[in-house]
Image 1: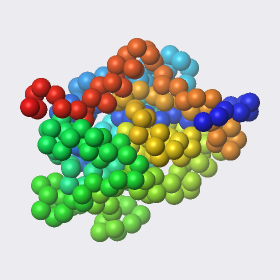
Image 2 (image 1 turned 45 degrees about the horizontal axis):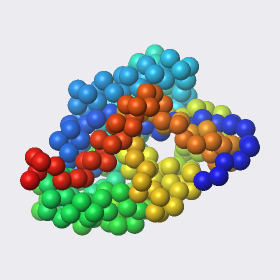
Image 3 (image 1 turned 180 degrees about the vertical axis):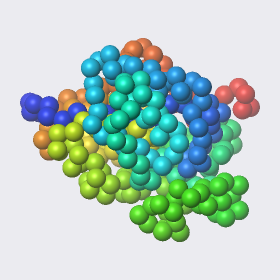
Length: 265
């Protein structure tokens, strides 16, 4: 996208949560409530220390309803010495709902269905995976969870599977009605969410095409800084903060998750 000569008026930070237990196992996690792995805890703490060292502070933090997103936010603001900053949670920032794919190993799926099919399921904009049904081993664990009784829609209206487009559709009302007013009031906001909810927001904010969003990869625990004008349009390219060599290695690791590897043959 093109960037104008407008001055940066607002800073917004997006953060994909630290590594979760199922990321380490290369499984589709989605709405199953996994905790952070030991490495994920370290990632979140290091993220907080980096942000503090660079002089950033937050006025509001937003997370999903999933523990790995919430725990990441807690660890970040603790490392920054800002535990008092308000944290608001919403299902609308949840990870993409992967439907019937939940719990399956990505590399094994690539072996059985081909890497291109898995890439389409994982990264495409408008392709929806097969929906979860009541026979799925994680159906009850998700839909009988008390946290979803707090949503602004009835449990039976919550997604059973989502494309990235559908993630953006359910996220946009929350962005426009809750988060945007905070940013426009002059508050610096951190959104501690998930790979796909952050990618959906990036698509909207940066006006990324449906084809190009396939190539946008966000590694765990790496803060993304967006500098925005008064209309919340980017005035410069997004910045992934931290050691750039490590960030590129982390991006490659994420991209390789959907590929066939020796252990899955």
